[in-house]
Length: 142
Image (tube, rainbow, N blue to C red):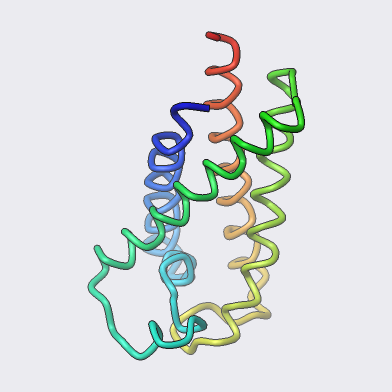
């Protein structure tokens, strides 16, 4: 649990790179959606440089990772496989809940874009899988 922030940073960087590669190769705006803040009042009035938007994403990733570490710890999810499955499912659900925010921006994919949704969910599943593996590895070494 001590390294949860680092795991969030590492996994968040992975997710950003994954979506950037997907967006550059398919032209589906999943990276743009990841960095999108158009639905957040006050913040949506400003245009931030890409690196600041990535920093916002990484802060959220770190906070999510710490939250998941607490949940895993307090629910006593013991087995490696269970931690990986739990984190993957939680992050997939978060991705599913966040995708509709695409409707609040004209810069992001259409809410009806099935390929964008599939890449979005796939990326979040990989992110959760990576977090779960990192948490499981830490549990085994303790």
